[in-house]
Amino acid sequence: MVKKVALALAVIVLIIAGGVYYLFSNLDSLVKVAIETYGTEATQARVSVGKVTIGLREGSGAISDLKVANPKGFNTPEALSLGDISLKLDTATLQQNPIVIKEVIITRPKVTYEYASAGGNLETIQKNTQAYAQKMGAGGSKPNGAATPQKDGKAETKVIIERLVVSGGQIAMSHAALQGRELSAALPTITLTDIGKSQGGASPAEVAEKVLGTISQQAARVASGELQKQLGDQLKGAIGGAAGAAGGAAGAAGGAADKLKGLLGK
Image (cartoon, rainbow, N blue to C red; front, top):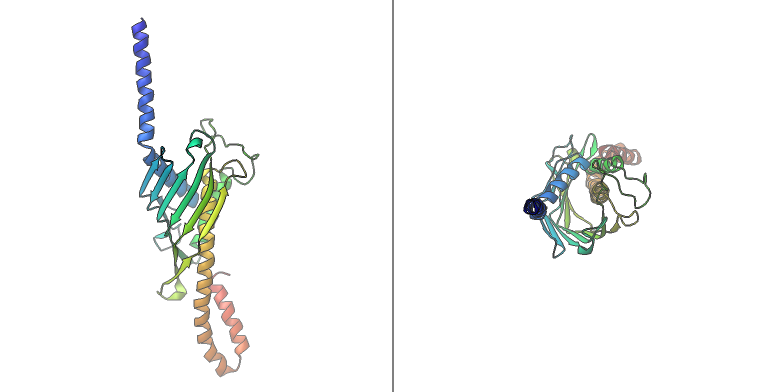
């Protein structure tokens, strides 16, 4: 009888050990699936990841080839390509909730700003992530620090990101008024600190809203300004001659401004 009980316990321990081994040996792929699933739901556009490498002992991580496709209604294949992403984890918090990520560095992201009849693609992604975060319980509906229960009754794992930096980015711009020409500009360096700290941790939806929303907002601001500059110069040149011939420079300038605003949806 004792031997049978011991054998049963050994089998249970073996199963648990196998489960733990599966979890840690497949951690990279589990994180990859989580990013793609949460990202696609949040942005309403396909999110794909090339590779994820997590080193729990070293407290480090790397994500490569993370791409966010465009939502419906846009023609360019991608809105965001986040290049190389490196992580530094606080290993002492890996068994806690929230988990603390000391640093996230995103280098050389590529952003495509496309303006269509429905508006800008980046603004659309930003609105989608905001709506998703609100749907998942963001926006102050719970007391600070209260964890959102999952379907299985367990508290949702949250994170605090102490520092996030986006650097070396480029923006490409697409607009029908450019008549096939491409414009590009540098994305300003973005630094965010203490994401999720004030509310005791941020959910994946809230992190997506904050990070993708900020990148989209900054890129849209730069792209819109560049488009206004380029298209404004074109309109000034085209209308300036007509204004001189007609003797109505002031009225022509006003029409140019109105036309430019219409083109950019302002």
